[in-house]
Length: 508
Ligand code: SF4
Image (cartoon, rainbow, N blue to C red; front, side):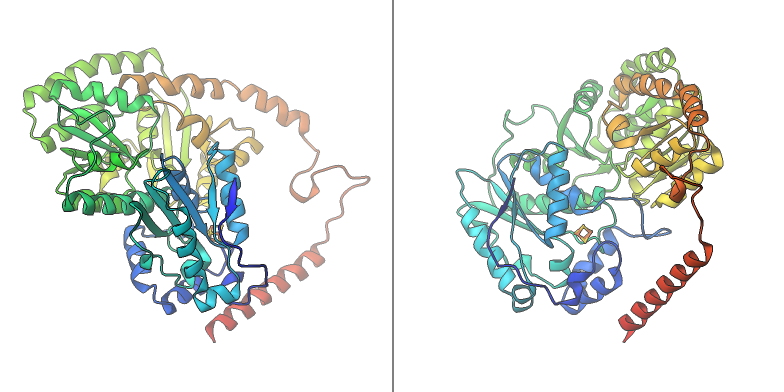
């Protein structure tokens, strides 16, 4: 359900920034944000989430990432401030993914935006919501237009009636992917919780404090994975700590109180900054396959000061089980991997150890120190690893390699299927499986081998539909569709001059 928290009244929004969004105008919005005093914010985002070589990696609206993190937390209210169409899309998508939680919305018009009334409306909405019987925290998110207009969420009260107020800016023109937007919120919450812990006693985790030093797991993962990782850590006298983003505010303190932080997903830059400020060592990569698990256990032991003989014991316990699982579920075939979850390199490692040939891995996420071990391992095996991969780059890889299976995002999968190449959605079918230790070693083979085995069906379908037309000649026609190259050229020239005129206008 979406609740309108303050009725500003409909009126056309005149400010130029309101008409630009994720389909263009990023430069205009960035310039507007800087003019409105947002330079520090933009510089921080550019440093945390650098773009390049591609500045448009594959992603849905970035704010979906932070929205989902907030909606998954107990006793946390969520308020969006942005254009109605953005809020509609975001709430639609979150409910499509089963959020079943209310999303608050503070609407605006040109007047409330320009006069600062929108900020007052947000502040009033937050005051009205802040009921400590219901909430530990309220997350307020500025989307593109309020960020570009400099709506100052930092000026909101930090706490109302004991309810924490966390204001974040998640503009599409500053946060490249929805994965990194999860970090924006997780990092803001960790910063808040760290200040609280520094200033006095804080709540223990729901089940009480762990009797062993813990390893915080950074990055959303399949629910069975933290349990499996906990078993791996046992012989070293360690326990799996909270998964960040957490499901409850009090878990943030336990996450900060860990012995080591495992950056399982490598793009949590702001969160890592908070852990490092709390004095916690951060370890990259993850316990994936034989090589990955062995190296990860060594790195965790070194960071936690665990004697080498205990690390050896932990490795010995895992080694046989993972080797057995890999041998029992071999994968044969050539597979391309692309996605925007941040775990693409880990999935590729597991596929290769399972026997697959993986010539290409594209990830929308940036290169960071915490995936270097995975990149080195993959490149040593001849894999091309592309960070900040655009859709075009991922599709080009599929077209050039013509794999037995393409794992990717929806448009990549669609393109592969058009070419009669079996394909699997990364997010729904690959991310939704255990990945680590022995459980992960056997989990991918079933779905991957099943998909590769479907090739004959794709060939039959391609033969069946051969000649029905494609692109703008697809569909039912009473006669042969007429191509009009002259009209097409005229339209192309018109678009080109419109775009040139817009650029010239922006430069004035
Ligand atoms: S908030 Fe999201 S949907 Fe709206 S303009 Fe920005 S990137 Fe696009």
